[in-house]
Image (cartoon, rainbow, N blue to C red):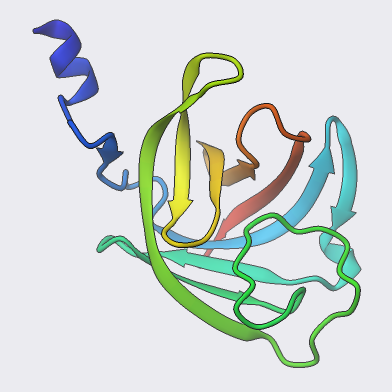
Length: 142
């Protein structure tokens, strides 16, 4: 009974969006391990808005239209005009088979999945465990 209470007994593994993820986040930097790989001074731009109803909008200039990805890497070219895409997202606990533990996952439905963590006004997203430790950092904005 206690375990059920702590995990909310959600059979699908989908968690309701915590208030912490709702809002507007602007990309600040990407790092590989403990080294900054790319900073916002690079002119790459991403802003994601997570809505309470499970939808998001993503405005970006670092990749081609329809390439929805929260990880920011060195772009081959920047778009002159940013584009905005939207879709649905889910928060889940996902089993990482390579290390046999569950991690908090942010899933952009039909697109990519990420491990994520929020600390204060900072959102960190990375590829699932066992892949290269490339992480993009977003800060809450108004």
